[in-house]
Length: 233
Figure 1: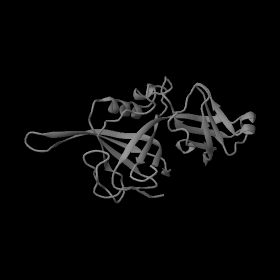
Figure 2: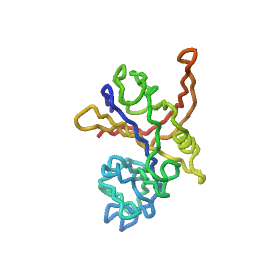
Figure 3: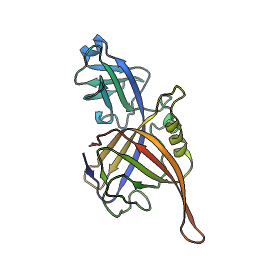
Figure 4: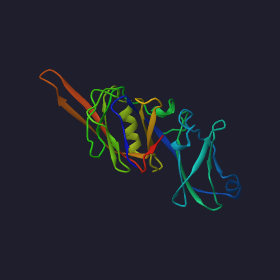
């Protein structure tokens, strides 16, 4: 899938994903075609669209038909479940203690600096957007079916980098921390979303550049991998 963006007014929201891995489907879950995950609350803002979640049954992508959260639990409904299947589930998780990243303890998504600029999408349209999201850029961006993303963040405090470093390190249990990157295009009548699911922080770095003899720019750069396809809403 390739999705071409338009020329301005994009924003980037990044959410921490809860991962329910290697869940064995019980007879009751198969009869109801849904799995309840207790003690974990899905993110209320995005979860109305089941496209923000992803599930695998015995390693094959499986259709999720809905995600609801009674109190502090989450119910994930599937088109079909079979007793004994091994299911893996990913969905954006709320804060309130169920997230692993610092920003996610309160807001449910990572706190990004106000100024963001794309450095490279690893596709033919390799452009830089200046000075921030919402500004005109030189060319459209195409979202490839797979690949990596490098997102440059003009520094405004250190919270975002602390989250990305923690995401790359993973949990103390050794489990990886997965993210969802929601690229929102607001230049059309109904905003569109390109979802990059199961993203991981592959690397991060810092770059400095002289503007002139008295000014310079420091940019933190984070590189993500993600699992295709890009989901366009």
